[in-house]
Image (cartoon, rainbow, N blue to C red):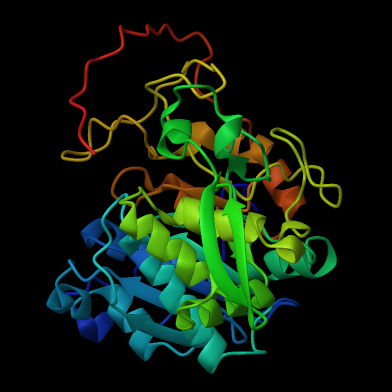
Amino acid sequence: PSVFSSSSVRLSTADSSDPDEFQCPPCPPPSKTRFAYLISVHDDRTVRDAVPLINAVSAPNNVVLVHVDTKYPREYYKGSELSKIVEDCQCGTRSMESVADCQWGTWSMNEPTLWAMDKLTEEYGGKFDRFINLSGDTLPTLDNGAMGALFSESLGRYNILTSYWSETGFRPTCYDEFPQNWHKRNAYRYPIPVSYVEGGEQVSKRVKVYFGSQWMVLKPDVVTYFARSMRDPSSFCSALKSIFLSQRRVVTDETFFATVVMNHEAFRQTVPGVEKGEGLPEARWLTSVRYERMDEHSPSATGVLPDRQRYRAMEPLEPRVWGPYFLGVYDLKAIKDSGSLFVRKVSLAVEPNLYKIFPKGGREEVEALPDIDWHGEIDYMISDRPKFPANR
C-alpha cells in the first residue's frame, strides 16, 4: 500500500447540513493503554478539524472529553458533525462541556484542563492509564494500537509537560534559565513565596516558576492530585493560583501545571531529564511528544535565528508573531525527525494532506515516509527591534 494511505482517520461522511447521510465511523479495537483525552475547540475551524482527531483517538476503552469554548455559540456546535460524533456515535466514552471562555495570559486557560481532571477523578477513577490534552487542530502520528503499545511497554513511568520547542527538552524550563531581559524571565524575576497546608501542617516555601507546554501527557496520580488539590482552598495548587491572581501575573496553563509538577518532590522524578534534541532512553527516536512550529519571526531565547517560513494562513489568522503555524506535507521530514506522537497545528481548510498520511500503525511506517522538506536555501532578514507599546 501507499505510504500515504491511512486507515485510521475517517474524514467527514456528510456535511452537517445533510444529517440523513451521516454515518458513524468504525470503532477501532482497544489498545494496551487506556487513554483519557481532552480535546479543546473554540471556533468553526477547530470544531471541523476535531472530527478526524476524535476518530483517530477513539477506542472502546478510551475516554474522550470535548471542551467547547463558551464564546463559541452552542447552536453552531449542535449543528456540527463534531456534535454528532460525540453524542450519536458509540466508541468508548465521549462527553462535551463548555466551562470557560479562554483568554490568553489569564487563569481561564487552565480551566478546561482542570475541568477534565476533576471529571476524570470523580467519574473515571481507575478507568484510564494516561491523560492527554489536545487542541482540536492536532493529529496523532501513530494509531491507537501503536500508541497504546508504546506507553505500555516503553513510556510507562513518564509524565511529559513539554513540546518540540522547549529550550530544555523534556524538562520544563525554569524562569532563571532564560537569558537576562528575556520576556519569560522578566515575568517571574524571583521565586514566589507560597504558604499552604499539607498533611495537616502549615508549609511555607519559595517556589520557582517553570515553563512547559499547555498540552501534556500525565499519569492518573498527577491528574488526581490536581483535581483534589483544586477542591481544597488550603492546598498548594489553590495557594499558587491565589498568588498568581492577586499579583496579576500572566498565568497560562504552560506555567501553572509545569510549576506544580516541578515543585512536587515525587512528580519531579517522573519528568524525563532529557535535554533538547535527545531521545528518551526507551525510544531514542522520540525527541518530543508534540511537534509544532513556533517563533519563526524572532530569535529564540538561546539565540537561534529563524530560517524557515512556511504556509500563510487565511485571514484573519495572519500575521502571527509567535505561532504556532500551520503544518503540511513539506513539514514531513521535520515531523519524522522529531519522533513526535502528535502534530499541531493542522487544518482541513489550510492543508488537508496530512490527514491522508497520519496516523500510522507503528514507528516503522512513519520511518518509511518520504523525506519531504522545505528548500534549505531561504534568505531571511531580522529587522530592528520594534517599539511595541508596553501593554500588560
